[in-house]
Image (tube, rainbow, N blue to C red):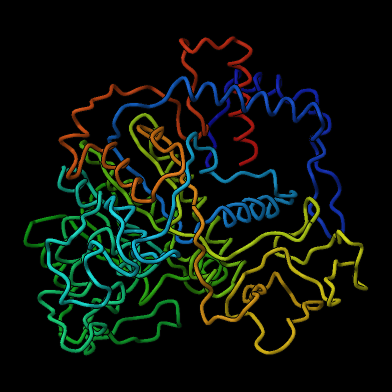
Length: 576
């Protein structure tokens, strides 16, 4: 993480808060089975911590940013539930040899948080197509629909016509003259990114090869075709899914699989990558296309106005797999976000960037808990990178999930119990020969578990994990009942917000409400004539990196209160 330099005042403020315990600030020795709990924690430390948090909250409340946003950075962690955030937070701390529970992810420093209800028009537990459509357009729809309203029946082209289209805030931001970017670790035609630019009765229609026989391709074009036709004027498009843009007669290189050759999927014979290139050339634009990490690295943000990057034949790899492969690296989410913001921020009229950390979801579906948490941590890094490249005074930044997963953390573990391990402490004093807690069946159990998924045993007792390496990359955490693909969860998801108009996210909201907040903040969209009539003067706040706005002199805070609030910022700097 890039850290801002500390001022003398900041250091002094930190000492006000931490001096009583500074001599005990070293970590306690690591036990054989647990990560160390910070030894500086004491009753007085918790009092000081509470005071600092309270004063920082007062400072934030006195300085709500009621102005409009010039820029938007919207992070969507696919499947980012409260449980995924909590487990990611603990894992982050434990990778730093801390107990982990006291750690903090970058977006947890945002001053506003709300909950979003994720059901859609016909399902209690929603999919990513419907949730992304609700978030982007401000209107809920049916499960599996992409950018169309609930009058369209999933998979039925005859029920669709353009009057049923729902347009995203990204579409409206581009029409308003802002630079627009889309970044994902999934196929760029996958459900979540597709909802930002496409209109389809089915999220599955990613290429023309996926269209049912007899489908009117003029009326219901595939999603890849729509990306080129609907988003050719978008400045940055980074993701995967290259084969959806290439005809079957052409092949492309799978750089992540020993440079093997893979054929395109398109049956219409059209090379959509070349079509995109030709569109950019016809408009005399400075553009680039990239399909490898080296080509990505060669893109100069200062001299590139439009870029299409398709870095994988399908989804990009899990972050953990990417880090472990010495032979080839794909661009990471944080690298793509960094380059996208550098390109987009050159527009004096502002920009809108939508970022999906999509592989959190895929890891959960396969019960790959470790992979899921590594992708959460990469999202954390990407948010940190965006915070360092933007200013809270003019940039609305949001982090949310589209839905949850049936993923749990529990087992009565003590502080510092390895998040990827078996539970050591037994609440009922039952242990195996290794000193690990066991259930009534005499077998140990893990901290992380799933309600369903492919790891569940079928017709036999659950797996005995006594000798299992639960930290292995391919270890699948236990599930209760077997499912080929672990299911989504239906509970509310958190929405973290900072910057202009973030205060409007304050309660339990319909997920579709998020889209209205964004369009209000940017002053775009079909309700702009109403939203923009309510002009609000911008306010001045501190940088994103502190995690909290700086208090104004008019707030009525005393000098000691200001010092304590600054100390809170120092604590965030230390813990991150």
